[in-house]
Image (tube, rainbow, N blue to C red; front, side):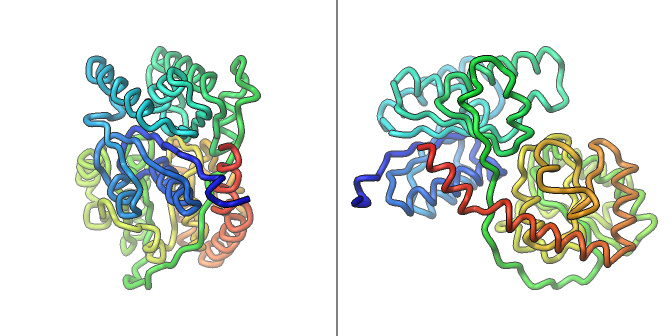
Length: 365
């Protein structure tokens, strides 16, 4: 068939324009769709790194002024009207939405205007985060409405799907497509100091406060070691204050936002992901391709990647003692680190390919 006959108009939507996992997902799908000669645009709040990266790829970005994760009733009415007008003007064949707030507003707009195919990707559940019970109930209800109203919902992990699959009237709308990753180049290592590191948004859900508590104990045993944290976010000042109060600022380096951070995984000896909640984190897959030994919490889709003791080590969330003792174990056993890293690289290459993710996603369009 002639290629242009397959061309579609695809509108991607996401709440924030920072560059976390969900934004990376949107970016990579948008870039691949453009390579296939589809007409692609991305609707998002703000003009952050996601918007800048998309523009660098000559992908149209439609910015929703003031649109963010926090709720603001009067402002959000205006945001909803903006989204409705945008969807009406764009008239996409496919409206692919990520993140909860854009999910609700986008699906309402898409259904109102009769969009042919509305896809929602669930990157994780806010009701799994530590929050009051009444908030969890409301979030679950609106999430159910979002899934019910979408033509298809993609889950990036089996665990994410399991959390929702028993809800009524949605069984045939659900599919799992794991995040995928392509090979990438690593920078040459310059600092030979023993280094533990992570790449994460500085948000409470990432459990970095637990990591700092564990590090406080670990550093007393291994005073030569360094902890590197790449990423930025709302918890930056709190985490820096915590490090000062613990007296570990000399051994902890908050790098902030690092462009193409994954290339610097070569500077780590151990990668740590101490999250309280996750779906299918890209950084875990990146650490695997970098052949790093990984310590991660047994939450969300992480156990779908890490088989504890085989290709990494899983510890309970919130357990600083377990994290501390595992850091000590890996720091003092180089052969174990090598074995875990080698095994993780093999499993990521085999089960989490970028090509497979793109093929299965576009098949839904």
